[in-house]
Image 1 (cartoon, rainbow, N blue to C red):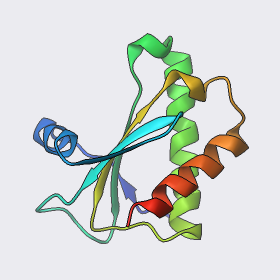
Image 2 (tube, rainbow, N blue to C red; image 1 turned 135 degrees about the vertical axis):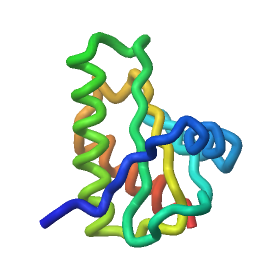
Image 3 (cartoon, rainbow, N blue to C red; image 1 turned 90 degrees about the vertical axis):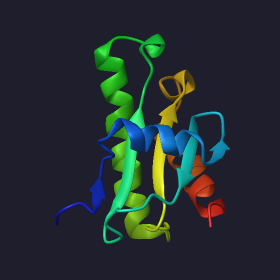
Length: 113
């Protein structure tokens, strides 16, 4: 089955989302809000990891984890498709178990309604 997740692509989209609402926990900071001219059939989300976190292997591992969690979240919890999301990872994601990160992110996305 094809994923219903599409990444944000334009610099203006990132800048607009950074000015919208924000939710944060010990693993990620999530910026969210409605963007005009976006397809509402898909989840518009992008994952960002800073270079300060580590080398490319570590940063890509974090992005893979986040993508996997979001694929599960689309299937299991109700995520608002009218919003676009920008997920900025923190360095604490590397040292914690996948299960703990997943539970925390599910709780955070359920709060966003």
